[in-house]
Amino acid sequence: MKKRYLLFLIGLTVFSSHANQTQGVNAQSLYLPGGENIAIEIKADGLLVTGTYDIQTDKGTYNPSRDNDIWRGDLIYEVNHQKITSIKDLPNVIEDKNQQEYHLPIKLYRDHLSLDKNLRLIKVSKDGSLKTGLLVKERILGIGTVSIYNTQTKTYAALGHQFTDNDFENVVELTTGNIYDSEVVGIRKSNNGSPGEKVAQIDENKHLGSIIKNNPYGIYGHIDQLPNKKGMEIAKQDEIKTGNAEIWTVMKNKTISKYKIKITHLKQQENIAPKGITFEIVDKDLLKISNGIVQGMSGSTIVQNNKIIGAVTHVLVDDVKKGYGIYIEWMIQEME
Image (tube, rainbow, N blue to C red; front, side, top):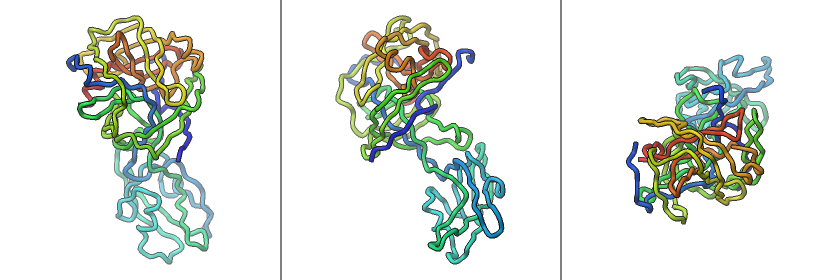
């Protein structure tokens, strides 16, 4: 089954311009360049609360936010002393099925702290269905771009920054999940002050790999099957120059295209850090398609002189033709 998702703030990190090592590898067969568009699924160890709603009862209106201090952004991981990972688990934690209303102890995470609360479950129909007043989800979905593959370990690196959801940045670390096949079906163009986005279809029947690490420098995991393409050498920082380079990314369907950029600044970094590469899009075809960097380009491979040098990570929100990248050596370090 294919699902269509719009990207916003998941596939790329946006920054205002007012805000302000590993060894080189010469074995061309070890690393493959990326550029593939992928769907990203991060699983939560519980239920992520996305909102609440009112329930009319004989005693009045009940809302879990107002009445039980359960808020959007909370992660519920235990109900009635039982671990819970799906809304379908709720009937299993109820001991007496004949009551019209239940008051159950729950545990949730908020701001990295575990809190004890209570939750009311209310029967609202003759079939015995229960209402909680909670809107929840069990995972976070988005899309991004693969940066590089390691053929020896069958691992990949993608995105170049942490995969997050604005509602759940301060709950718990969301580190594991899966990647799936994805096809770009449209582009919403960027404008200064308003970055655009890729529109993609996600095919959850085509599992591509696992996610075992999700940190400020990207997502990392194992790939089910390596793509059939030629390997490429890796450039160390001292080999990278300002001037002409390319980004490899998908802007239509599943076709990886190469687009011209100009590297305008290189920051020498002794330790892992983001935004080592500053660049500007100069490719007329890409500017015609997107008018600049769009959400979903994160992880797009940066190539210079037939070597992989980095990955796209950030767009300048007030000048969308400009952005930042992370050095590929830092992503390789995280793959190990």
